[in-house]
Amino acid sequence: MAVTNRPKIEAYIGVSGSGKGVSINRRLDEVKPSRLLIWDPRNEYPKHAKKYDNLVDLVAHVKAAKGGPFAVRYVPSEWVDMEKAFATMCALAFSAGNLLFVAEELSDVTKPSYAPPAWKKVITQGRHQGLHVIGAAQRPALVDKNFFGNCTYIRCFSLRYAEDRRAMGASMDVEKKRIDALMTTEAGNVTTINYIERDFREGLLQEGQIKLTRKG
Image 1 (cartoon, helix red, strand yellow):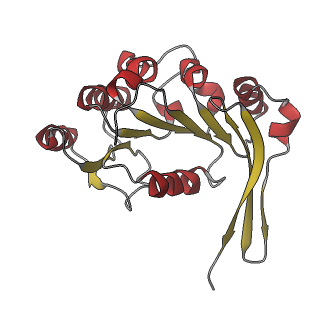
Image 2 (cartoon, rainbow, N blue to C red; image 1 turned 60 degrees about the horizontal axis):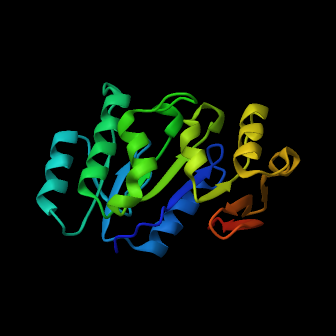
């Protein structure tokens, strides 16, 4: 991955099963990062990175790589201090630099008015370290607002709670009714996922669909 001073912070937002994971997996296939670090509390990305459940070992792996390639993800156990572990991952991403950092389930580890300082540093200064950041959440109203304020791209799927739909309408600068209209529907063996996305860098706002066909 080439170091860039341009910010690249992407958000994928929606309820469970609404298309976040599909979109992020496709994005990783598209980018093909040579250096990949994933905060993976739901164990969703086995295709892309080696799993670690011991944070000390994961940190050692990344440091041993120095400037070379790696693809690792941390899947914390239920006994782990989530906020502390997430802060460690953020600090590791920043210090290692020149990588793609995926942070899943941000509402688990941030709040609207608070996030670990290391996460704030990733979001506000990460471009100087060549970081490409992808963040995801099911409950955007519960997520650090600083994250949305610095996003260069947001893709939003269906959301169950009105407060979440309001939050995304405000973050994307679109009417709430457009967020309200987003749905995931099933007809036969075909699932149709609707989304709306805004690329802040290009000034583009558009709607789209993902169609998934179940086998059998």
